[in-house]
Length: 320
Image (cartoon, rainbow, N blue to C red; front, side, top):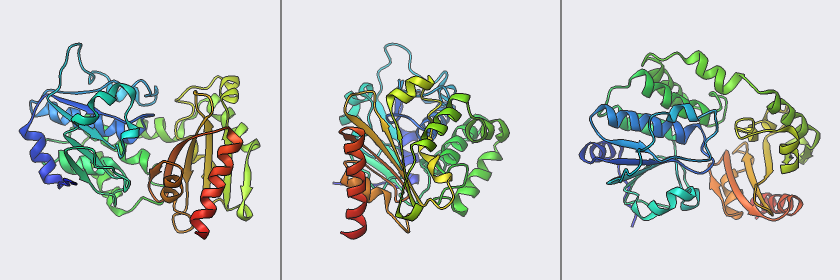
């Protein structure tokens, strides 16, 4: 039975318990990391013991926000909270022992599986950071450190307020977070303006591999492990690489296929115009999920096999 709670009930729960371990999802992005960091700092501010479980997948782009927040050896949590995690499949290996121990999940995905004892869900929110902000401000002061972490959560999930999920409420939350006193310029430059040379080289390769369909409205790009090794790229260089194809004029729907480290497995990332194609429905057919405008899945098969599976799924959603 689904136990959905409000932000007020979530705040009451958090102030009534202690000894927190906060979980972030596989291949952590700015939303899950920012939410975890902001929530952890807020809980510590009001005298709670709180830590964030280490996530080996976090890139150097986001790891600074977790400094000083991971647990000391021997820490045993009493309360487990997951942020921005819709499904059991999103748990990193070291978080899987807590699958049956999650007391509270805070999330914004319509594909939420309700695996926790209580779930604070608002699928209308563009970012989980908006929900964490609504919860935290009910029991803690939004300091510059908390404000910066939650700003990272909100701004990265909205593509610096350029994605279709951006609405007036996103801007209002961002403004409130900026009022906390942190300097947004270095944050915005770090996440939205600066690019490594290796990232530019990857984008060049993706441009060369570009496949256009539907008269140029749909584009597919392919990123192989050989290319990644040839460029010498790491996870930071590839952060949000799936957004690249959507920058091309005329492209409504961008599909990025990236070979995983494991053999015969490809990660699919869809960024779409939800009025033209529902990304979540496409990825649901492939064992994944997400939002109407942004979704993903991990699919077994070669690059060519997975390419065809994606095309078939898109056609099935469009034509039934």
